[in-house]
Image 1: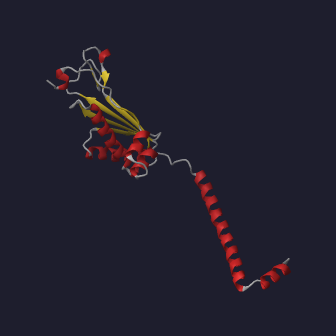
Image 2: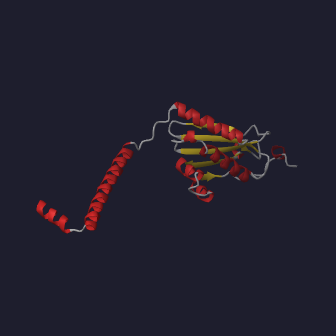
Length: 205
């Protein structure tokens, strides 16, 4: 066998021998790269579980989002849970009849506040609640609701909720998807259209 190989190498021209050696080297490199890829794949599979969200990481994320909301002129509360959920509750006064527009604006502001914080990486979900309140809230209704009478049964919740997966939010923030695509991935419940309110509750003559 060795004699045949030696005879073949001698019978080949110099250029052919160089081409044959280059082909063998290329195969060797390809095998090496394949081995590295397989090793990395195994390592990734073994490390597929995200590192735990320690109390320190949760607090850093909470504070960062709270600061971002404050800088954006939003008043609210932020909670970060061990299960990877970020809860944002915003309070908005009822100063206009365009509750849907106010809710949309508040939700987008909250989404931006969370997405811009690298300290919140590792969380899974963002849940946002926009709670509308009135300075002359009917005492028969719980906070965040309004009534046409003093019967609590007539109270209508004036709130909006939104829920989105963190990977989708980060993909949007990095430019991977546009606003329309993110909107389709957000589970959004706008505020219910309230019944006509009492003049003293709206300030509208």
